[in-house]
Image (cartoon, rainbow, N blue to C red):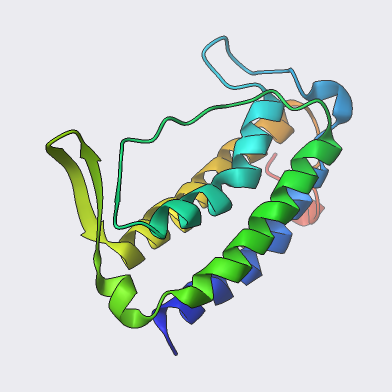
Length: 168
C-alpha cells in the first residue's frame, strides 16, 4: 500500500469521529472559552475543521513561508461543519496525488534565506495533519467536558457513552 493510501485510510477512520465532536458544540457556546488566553470554543472547533485541508494544501508545495494561522470566530455550528466537509473533500482529492517518491521528498518552511524546518513530506502530513489534528480534538474534548456536553468516544469509550467507565 502506498504511503498516501495509508495516511488517507487513517484520515478516513478519524474524520467521522472528529465530526461527532464538532456536532456536539452547542450553538450558544461558540464564544465561550475556558481561559482568557484560550481560543473560543467556536474558534477551536473551526480550526479543528480546517486543519486537514490547510495542511494538505501546504504539502503540495515543497517550500512554504512560516504559517500565519488565523482563528476566525464562526457564526454557527453549521459554518464549522460545512468547513469540515470542505476540508475532508480537499484531503480526499489531494492525498492520492502524492506518490511514494513525493512522500519521501523534502518539505521545508523557509523564512527569507533561513530554513526553519526540513522534513520528509510524509512526516509533515503525519505530524501536522494527523497528530496535530488529534491534539486539537483532545483539547476540544476538554472544552466539551467543562461545558457539561457529553463527550463522544474517540479511540476508546468515554464516560458519557459508557457510564461504567466513569471515575468516582
